Image (cartoon, rainbow over all chains, first blue to last red; front, side, top):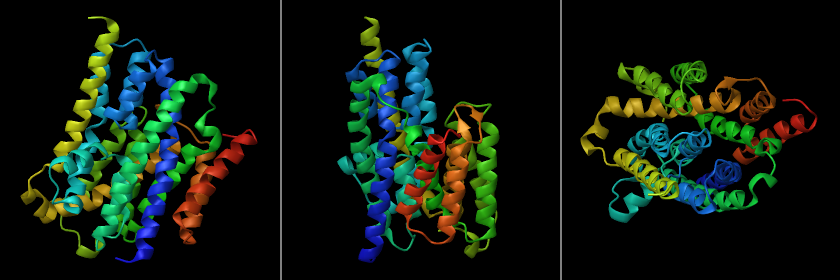
Length: 230
Length: 107
């Protein structure tokens, strides 16, 4: 572990936290528009804390669906977070009690991505990436949700600030160092194409989950060790 | 119970289920994690999930696929990564490219 590496990790954690947290503004505004009050909107961000699930929840409510189909959709879209926990377990263990409870709550796309993007031989950097991104997104997402709920429709579109492209670029930057070998490149291409092919036909969140099947196929056989990304 | 109260029940239920799903992943038995096949799959899962997120975040607009300012931004980001630019520069330039193109009325 070097100080330089940890500084780079924290820099990633903070930029991802801000870019993601900014989306809380549209969540807050859309949730109030869908008919929830400010307290309910903030409770969703605190308790559910998974962007895709929350947008799905208020989407169902806003379309006139009943609260229990909102719960089912939200839970379904959150299933991928369970797989993230499996991937993070070797990095974060041993972990018990409150620490595990807190780690579970901040196990999301961004904290997992930043943690696993750090070199495997540097577990300190991986843990730092997880906790800094998890805590950073949690604080930013909840604070900015409240702001969005209070401002309602008076705010602009985060797309005007290019924040959607910033999120795409952040994910690309995180996967980039893992694409050294052809097998990893093939997995990247196949999962991207599969997710896009499924986007028009299945609910949001599932295309990304389905991409995990590409990884199962790639890892099931016996690739040479140097072909397995760290 | 009022509709308002039921909404609160749904919010708390969604929160508990979300947390339980996340916790379940952290609680898998140690023996599973030591299996080399599980190790290999986990390594590829990271690449697969991140690549899927790049694709969806670049082309998806709700459930339709579109080509817009994000594609130009991600192309610039790829060039910067190839030139070994720092993470924060890649992210900031991508946002600026998309915002700039949209300000000019495209995408």
